[in-house]
Length: 76
Image (cartoon, rainbow, N blue to C red):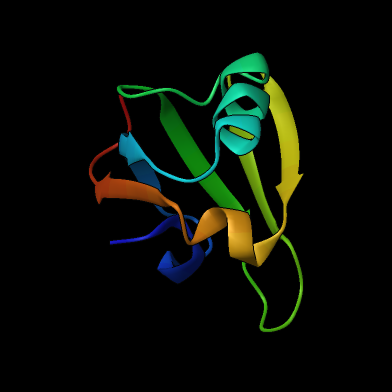
């Protein structure tokens, strides 16, 4: 499942990240790498996805979230 498809309140683990080198570097810089736990706070149509990751709240555009593959799971 892609991060852009996750429901609000969902806990998930990042499985993979794809995209340009620029995007991957930016995501690594904010701590979004394989194995990272995230919690989706808000995911409304036509708006950035708001999620909690590594003690930070992050808003990421939907197109970028399409490139982040996640696996839903229980809270760690």
